[in-house]
Image (cartoon, rainbow, N blue to C red; front, side, top):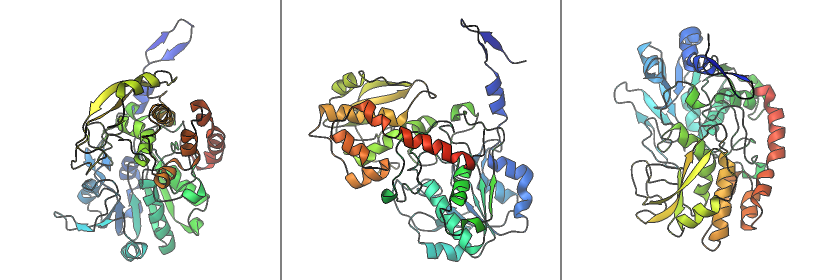
Length: 412
């Protein structure tokens, strides 16, 4: 029987139920291995994965498991950063060969369609198993769409081994992507925090006809078992494996959802430090002033502290902003993951910096607007628009999206 207690208002809460329930969650890869392996019997396979395609119950990568099961893997398709995350953000890389198995590892980052088509023509099934982080600008979902498009054209089966969204599936936040700002860091007209799994996004690609002749695609989504929309990563009893070099924890994924916007400014987003995306600052920022200003904003689920830092070039971040220069700023500590609003928090920081350092803050207009999905955010900040008013701009769009996405959803 689950443990319960009664609070002062007389409402009973179940303390242990969701914890026990979450223990039973199985990701799509586990479900596939246990129940759906016949889908690839006597088939030639291409596997879209990287080192974060980890199956906790097996304590192994999906690639290793397939090899042990003698699956006919013709080649690996790997996204931005490479299979072993040896490439930094935005770094193009060439095809490689697994030194142990001699299986080709083909780059999906910067490779052209005609080259990929020649490879995919040789196989029967593409299996997609990447851990997304729940942000529109994380490039794995754009990668998935590109591969789906080729599979549709070549009449190949596309199987998605679904995984939880670390940020949960309830909350959506941020501006919708405007059509004129579509790019590889934003290919879907969804909010920045979209509240979807990759399996649900794959459903959306087909249902909304985002790719040509999408209805002809043989799409199979292997869903997670017992996953609920209100679950976030730290409730799932899963092992975190970084899906990109600087995505060091699920906490990073939560803050990145907002603070990635600083990539489009002359403010350091913490690359080249031990806490990328949790440290925000610059050599021209007074950390104490910024901290005092942020205390005026009513932000839930986050605590700020003043910090001094020195960005250095390393294997995860080559030549970060303000490399080897002393910087000041703030450190973000999440105190309540369910209440923390990453976009709202980031906008508060931008407004505070604009208030105190208007002559120093600079935007890379094109890049920032692509990340935000709109030019409205940048223009509102530069116009010293009220913080609360800025945060209201996306509310109607998010409400419409919540209604529209219902037909793509897998989980309750």
